[in-house]
Image (tube, rainbow, N blue to C red; front, side, top):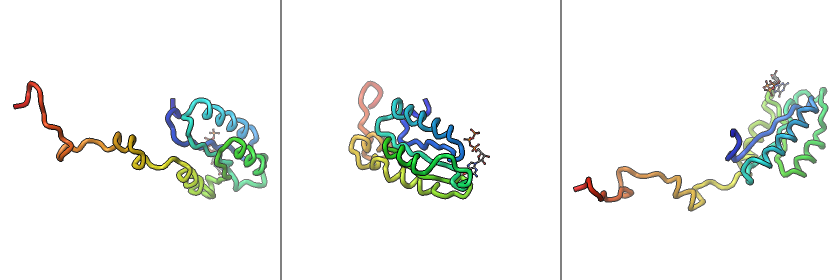
Length: 127
Ligand SMILES: Nc1nc2c(ncn2[C@@H]2O[C@H](COP(=O)(O)OP(=O)(O)OP(=O)(O)O)[C@@H](O)[C@H]2O)c(=O)[nH]1
């Protein structure tokens, strides 16, 4: 219900807890099964500031991400390392804006109630 129609998702695990990496993989599978086919999925290996407690190797997560078609970065919510970078990378991978898609552009244009978009009224109640 929450991710249906989502255009991007960030799946976060804790590099100091291998079980969170396994759960992240399960979430990626779930997203690939249920979410929109062109969803951009990013995997974040969080708590990169705690490298002395690391239990998931960078290379292991990176290889998994490459094999699965995910963006991957190690992040730290504590130091903000790679947080902006991850959002930027997602934005770059998203499909071009709706404004460049004629079908979506028409749908999103809205209706101008003041100007020339207004159609002349007809029917029983206009004189
Ligand atoms: N050192 C460090 N601690 C972090 C980082 N991100 C989150 N934490 C800490 O990890 C703990 C869990 O963070 P939450 O934001 O509650 O994460 P969560 O996934 O909701 O965790 P749960 O409540 O266990 O499900 C908190 O004590 C945070 O302060 C990080 O990048 N580095």
